[in-house]
Length: 343
Image 1 (tube, rainbow, N blue to C red):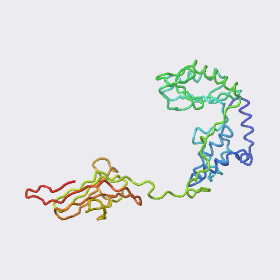
Image 2: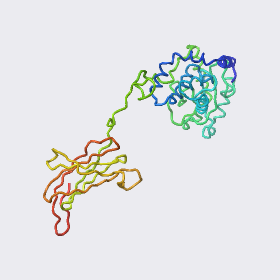
Image 3: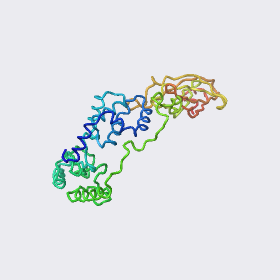
Image 4: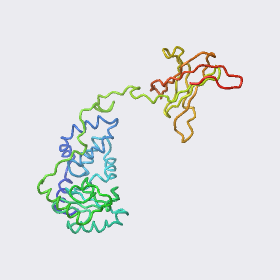
């Protein structure tokens, strides 16, 4: 890290105590409390807590990692491992404008090294360093997921997608040294016109004072009722007669565990459960495992009588709405063996 300003920041923040960090993070109390309400376990807060540290300090000093560990109820060692794993947490102060250039294979073939060399010469620094005025940091990175416009360049959160100030995406366009020079000039003017950059809310202006996750610290939320989201109903219900024997079949979603078969003999005014199908043990439709099931149930009614059938599917303790109705009249099997009725 070059530049006296950057080094001064490091020196000052290396002398930080945990008490000083706690005091500086006091304005974030409401957001931390909201996060703690949202997770069943406090450790779920860790990633956001590290973002809050970076928002306040501009990077993530090690003593800041200790604060994040405290509010997340994890060990400092665990928090440090997480902070080191994710590259978007800054381990040292960086410039106001972070220029990242991909040096992956695709971008290498399209001139990434030449582009990095030009930036180093134009800014008077080596990749990995920050300019003396604290404005620019240049980093070599691996894959920015913009190979089509390689060599990929990301300035803060903005990809270079096309020529001109609007940076509109242009298929196949690649940034050149001249393009980077124009960006640097424009960013210098921006910094001159606004010496203090706007502070960005790292959590995206989250809604505060929600009810939170049931059981979490400070949460008032209650578990949703078991039937808040019913499972899918049975589909393609059919009732077929083979004399007095009635076969009722349907199609059930793979998560359905059982299906209740209901019958009505008064045109659908009243319904009575006549049996239950163990859908878990029912074979699925042809194809990959884990797909829809095709359960069936056999009933018996008097020849010449009419009945209506419907299926109520269940998944554990959740119950689907009743299926569509299939009506059938039991017809005697003819001498040639043809079926009676279908619905």
